[in-house]
Structures are given as structure tokens and as C-alpha cells.
Image (cartoon, rainbow, N blue to C red; front, side):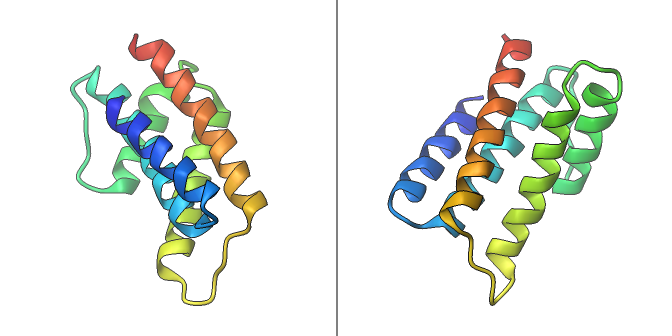
Length: 116
């Protein structure tokens, strides 16, 4: 969870500086690290990002332990981060970065309550 919080803080600093693509990258990693922290409580991990997302959904969202909104946030952040990092002509707006930030903050807070 410490990595999640650090990545989130990095994202906020980048967003405040107007680097929205960088902010989305860091926000995604904040969500990713939070998901991995929750998976670690069951001794689970995956080698690939999609594997982490799949395990997170299977182990925590499907049984109703974590909200479906958290799943949507993680999946959407992964897609948005991929666009921001790899698509040549994509620009992320302040409003898009802010929407990602809000969703990721909610996901981190939800996972933190479960991790304790």
C-alpha cells in the first residue's frame, strides 16, 4: 500500500504541474499496487498486468468483497495508461486526469480498509 500511496502522490504532483499523461501513468500504478497488495493477502500475484486485474476481479470483485466500481476503475485506468504511454497522438485533458484521480483514490481507500 505504501507503493500505491507514493504513486498516487506522484500522480497528483504531475497533474498539478500540467503533465496529465504522466499523472495518468502514476495513478494507474497506484491502483495496480493497491490491487497487488490485496492479492498478497492471499499469497497471490501475476506476472502481467492483465493477470493482476483478472485475479483481482476473480478473488475480490466477483465474490462481492470489493466493489464493481473498483474493478471498472482498475480496468479503465489500465486502458487510459496504455493510451497515454503508447499512442502517439493521444493527449489527456485535465478533466480526464481528474476523473482517473478520483476513481483511483476511491479504489485505494477501499483496498486500504480491507488490507488494514
